[in-house]
Length: 49
Length: 468
Image 1 (cartoon, chains in turn green, purple):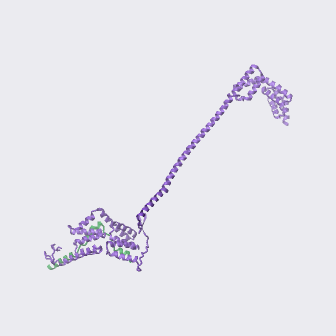
Image 2: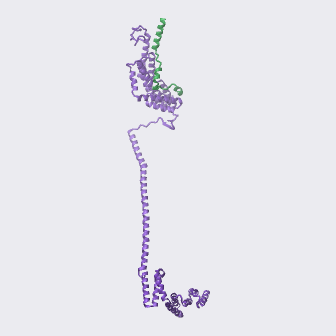
Image 3: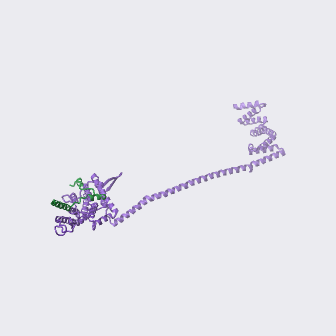
């Protein structure tokens, strides 16, 4: 049986147009490619040391 | 595909032909990103939007610069009604690749009309308001607000879901089912919608398979307060579908009702107004008639009065100038006086004088005439008195009492100083049996001639007659 209160927790307010800029700036854009490049660069640095 | 270190175009080799960097793992990551993009695209094509979102977001987690995946994610968000999320993705995409990027076109389309962007923003604000109503327990208001949201943006998936949830909470299963089907028309594999729909179908179709809709426990109306007014908005009320004939009949009935209302409401008012105006005029005319009637009556009364006056004056005039009138009698009197002066006939003069006195009230005549009358009377009085006295005494001896009374009365009249005439008059009355006049004559004698030798006898007669 659906519990309204519990289900309601799954919903959240939608972003308004004025909040779009903040949403863009606050978005975490780190991806797997970034992590890989970072790991490779760190590995290369350790090899040099 | 470019080298992460030098930016050169990569070949099929696992290293960069330009800088020699190991790109095997890097290539695998990009391949994975592309694979997830393809998966998202396939899902989007079959309107599995939530699945597409997951795939595309994963794709971007592998490689954030996958512009196609980001642009598609924006499109999917836009299709789900998440306009701000869509704009965010497109702005990021445009930022990552400023040129030759479809995201710019998408942004331009959305922002080209200020009204459209404002409508989108209003839709979002109303959805948020509905969400806060839900959290505060104002579910009816939330339903109304969500209906407004969906009328402005029918593809707003989360609004459909929330509305369905509210209907389910109100056990309005059919409405919830309808909303959930709309959700699934937008997003076929929406997990939340599918879960809710399963719940709804269990409520609508119990285990025995009978397709009996669940009984509604709540009212079919939504009540909410706006300022000081309680607004009751009926739910689930549909206008019955009618054909052209029914529409025509409805119009015809409306026209008939309108005409009937005109006949029963407006016409009586006009009729009453006309009737009142007519009554007012009749009253006014009646008042004028009464006034004129009163004036006519007054004039008639005056005319009658004048007629009476005229008749009276004519009679008066007749009395003066007519036959036997005053003027005629005066002429006769003057003629009588003239004859008396010429002939000296006392008896004729007396006769004429008596006739004049009978015909005319001497006291009402002029002063000069009265003086002339008295002069004549004085002139003929003593002689006439003696004549009458003699005739009266003779008649008394002959016991002709009536004649005696007449002559003796004249004698007293012509000569008031004749005591004997007055005494004999009393005797004539006494003898004739007229006691009252007899006493009056004797008393006059006693009073006017107290020294007369007839007083004693007159007094004795008075006493005798009084005792009788």
